[in-house]
Structures are given as C-alpha cells and as structure tokens.
Length: 499
Image 1 (tube, rainbow, N blue to C red):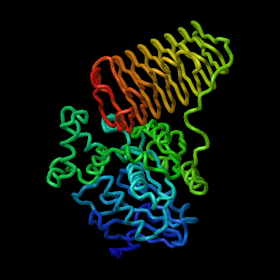
Image 2 (cartoon, rainbow, N blue to C red; image 1 turned 120 degrees about the vertical axis):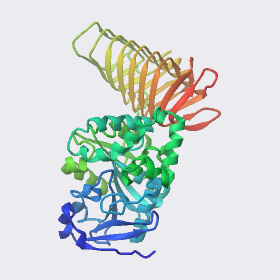
Image 3 (cartoon, rainbow, N blue to C red; image 1 turned 135 degrees about the vertical axis):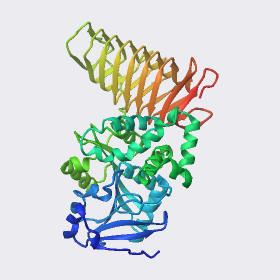
Image 4 (cartoon, rainbow, N blue to C red; image 1 turned 180 degrees about the horizontal axis):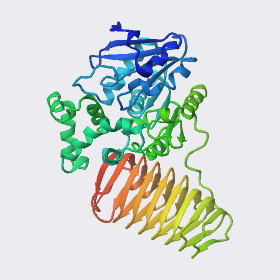
C-alpha cells in the first residue's frame, strides 16, 4: 500500500527538534487505513539496520516520551516512532481507539517499512499494544521491551490506582497523565456500582463502540476513549501466546501501574526477565533515562532469556533438628536446613534460603524468601499473623498452606498438597504469579482473595468454598478434570458450585 506523505520536516517542534542531527532523519505525516487518520511518524537511522518500533503510552507528548532513547538507538538500529492516532500531533477523531485497532495500526506501519521482524519497545498503553501485537502477529516481533505496562489487571484493580492517582498524582512527570485518567474516573464515578456491576460493564462497552455515545459520555475525546478501551480489554489469552524474549522494566514507585503487574508478567511470559528501577515513577525513560537506556540497549544486544525458574524446585530437608523464634521482639533471621520451624509471638522475623519439613507461625510478622517446605504430613500453618512469601515452594500431604485469621501475601511461589494445595480461613490473601495445586487446589472459608496471574490446578476441584463468596482474579487460569478456563474479574463461588 502506498504511503501518503502529508507533510515533512517542517513540523519539527519542541523536543522533537533535537532529532534533526540524527542520521537519515525524517518526520512525516502518513495516512493510515485502520482508523483512517493522519499519524505523525519519525524515522531515524539507516533502513539497512535492524528495525525497532517505539510505542508510547497515555499522555499528550506522544513519541517525545522517547526523546532520550531515540538518538542512542539510531546509531545501531532503524527506528520507527509514531504518535498513535488520537495522541501527540496525530489526528484526533471520534473513533474506536482500542488495543486491537492500535496493534493493527502499528503492524501496518511496520509492514510498510520493513518485512523483517521488529524489536518492539512499549510503555504503559504502548506496552499493552506491544503485547497484543506479539500475540496476534508473532512472526513480526523478534523481541519485546515492556515498561510499566497499563491495563493488565482486571479493571476494578486498575481503577483503584487511577482514582488514587486522580486525587494525588505525585511527581511532576506523572502529572502529565492526570488529564487522561481524570475524564475516565469522572465517568466511572458517575455510574453507581462501578466496574464490579455487569450492567455497568455492558454499558461501558456500548459507550466505547457507539460513536454517538462516545460523543455524549466521553467529551474529553480521544485520550479517554483510549483509556476506556484499555481498561475494558482482557490480556489473559495474550499472555499464553507470547513466546518472544521479553525484558520487563518497572519502577518500584509507579503510582499508576503497580509493580505486581510486572511480577505477574514475569511469571506468565515464558522468556522474560524483570528489571526494577528505583524511584522512576510511571515514566522511567524520562525520569531515569541513563538507567532505562542502558537496560534497553543491553536487552537488544543480548535478548533476555530466563536462566532459572522463578519458583524454586522443591527441596527436602534431611536435618531433623528444629528451629525456633519464641516471644522475641528484636529482629530475627533464620536460614539453613531444619525439621520443624516454629515462629510464635515474634514481630520481626526473616526466613531466607531455608529448607524445612514444616513451618508453624503464630501471632507473628514474617518475611520469607526462597523457602522450601515439604516431606511431612502438612507444609505451613499460619495463624493470626502477617506473612509475606516470595519465590518459595510449600508442600505437604494434607495441605501446602493453611492460613487462619491472617494477612498473607504470596509472590512467584507454589503451594501443593495431595488433598489441598492451600486452605484460606478467615484471612485476607493476595496472590501474584503463584501456582496452587492439589486434589482440591484452593479452598476458601470466609476469606478475601485477590489473585493476579495465578494458576489453580485441581483434580477434583480447582476452587471451592465453605460459604458463598466473591473472589477477585486478574489474568489467572483454572484447570480441573472438567474444565480449563481463564479467570479475569469477580468469581462467585458457592459450596454447591465448585470449579
């Protein structure tokens, strides 16, 4: 398809003018056929070099978000950067700005310039577009670099962060994004019940897809349409269909997209590594350009491949000796190999690089990292405690984990039992990138559950409850002898309706 060049380098303005000295630079407006709009496209570097495409996130700066990265890339790559339709200097219209259409726009742009597979770099909204592109058109994507991706969590969880950001946007960089979330937040707040109500979800889908309703309810225009299109999407299937080497970059203080999203992506994407930037906010390519650019250039030269499993393989302790922390207020750290580990009335305990046959925790606060429990009738018992478990493997014959009246956070771990993988009773539990397996994988009794990027693998049942409960899932998966399904949103479970 022929490209229609609307205008060229006379449109360099603001930060984009810094690119004039780059080799083989051009800035043009092109008519794209997917949304029938004019988009601004920058090219830099020799077309004979390996191709890279940059996809920006929400914010009116568009491709200028990449101003610190483009000059470095242009020395070794042919760089394509665009203002997505509805952003930057590109045309703004009342059209369906959703992830599928944006992915098709970028794919069309890639096809018109180079038939070779591209390195894709996407931030926030652009990261979500990159993932859809890799899932839909895998042959067109060589590697991916994803930064602080938005839209992966179920929409209720996303909007909790968006509401908080609307009220207190924090640093000056993230204030850029406030106008783009404020209009959507106003729409959501105007609808009683919010995203948790299926009627509201259906209404929002109608608004998104109907031009007249978009004009009525989304007067702020293209930015809010794009934001709504993002939060109404579901990336569960995409995550299972992405095989490309992927570097995931996240800031530890991102107040728009939580770090747990980066951790779930690392768990779900088969060939991925997560790198965390300190104090980078939501836009580390702007706030921490040296660190960000170093990570990007290194990943392009040596594509990331996972060298070891995120969840450690089970280890069995051969040492029957016990370990204790009893009624101690001072910090305690326990490592090594033991039989039974008992933590009782200790407010500051760290278990690290530990192998045990059983662990009992009562009225304590415990941080765990790289723990393996197994080889006994049950694995870990937690009562009236606050526990964080990372990169660990819990197993036992009766259950891997039993939590009673506790607050438990588990990341990138596994809990396995012959009868029950995990039992949650009167507890508040937050799971990220965790596998739970057993004859009955997860049994819930009067507990709150938020599971993100998790796999429930049961023989008789993957998910059951003693009382009716509504449990919240994001991009998770359930498997038992009768079904294999995705869980993305609130799931109602009753004793009569196990899954």
